[in-house]
Length: 361
Image: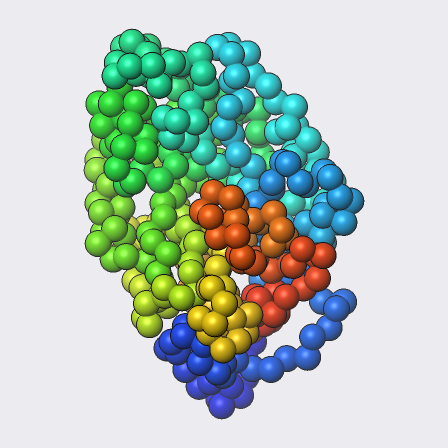
């Protein structure tokens, strides 16, 4: 914890600082390679997480060693487990659960219901406009069986379940929502089924709010949706914000925008998680020192989360720059957006998150 008033004032100035490459006022702590993110997160009973990328996580022993050493939580995707109707393939999920148990980690179950385009082929959602010809009653039964089978299989190794991914994005959950009578009804029913399967695990709703911060109009729409879901009997205990930020597009008040999200969550009696955090450093020449700037952005968001006792988890979207989704899915071929470079070397951004953890809650 920061004890000296001068350092406390400096930290306050950081949160108000612009993301446009301004010099950081963050306390300059010595870098000790024996220190880990998890070391400080565990002391705080705070979740420091990472996205498990199945294509890479077993390829290199160093990848797994770093995951177990640095993080106490990890994201496991529950997509495409029921590859054929009535047949569940838990091989990957079981491997992730085994890894988590061996390293005393907890898992976050992401994407129980995840986009029409990611639905199993046997649903035939993409054939014509009738979403496979299913009735609302049929798809309701399918959702209930799928959700409850997966949640029960996960047991207590999962610390939360994301019931429906990115619900405010227009059309993204099209067939699921259409057949269930709307996004609010879809989420209400699915969350009820998760609760029935395991009433002891928090249920989370997650969304993205832009690359430049947290757009307030989208945040307001998101919380209004949650109020509708609850009015229908749905169970939502926590909210997640994706922070796929781009340094060259950030609003000057991006930290205040995040704090607005935190405030709205508290008013609605919801815990908060930063569920997906990465920072594109920007194209060459966009900032004077892109990786110090990236460090500042990571520090600012981690610091704001840690200083709000309602914010419980901070998750980085990937372990190694070379494996980032931004290079392929987003076409940002020069992206180096996470805490470790392609050789698993700690970047300045790593030390930004570490500093926020060392400052505590």
